[in-house]
Length: 102
Image (cartoon, rainbow, N blue to C red; front, side):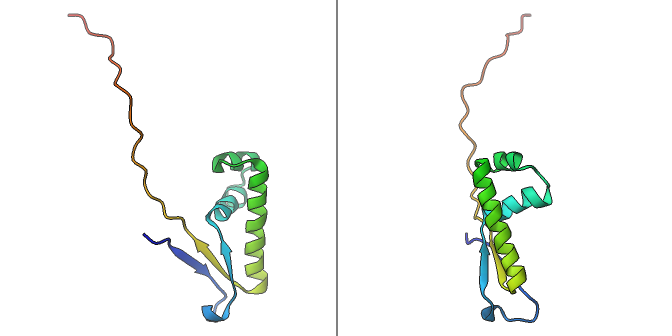
């Protein structure tokens, strides 16, 4: 399965005449958590499974990419990750409950 491509660009300008700026999936997620949901960096970093400093670096890069696309009139390309569902983890043996006495 191919990743889905989403592009935002200035109206009236053909895509082949625009420079493209790539926004990575983790950058989009950082923007969503920090700017859309208003989460604090520590909480957002925990949700993404990264350190707070790594979250800050990802967020800074994401804001830079979006700002560049808006200010310089570039196309902004978002690339979704292809998600493959993982099989459920194997379960251990079932525990027997207390036996009923009759």
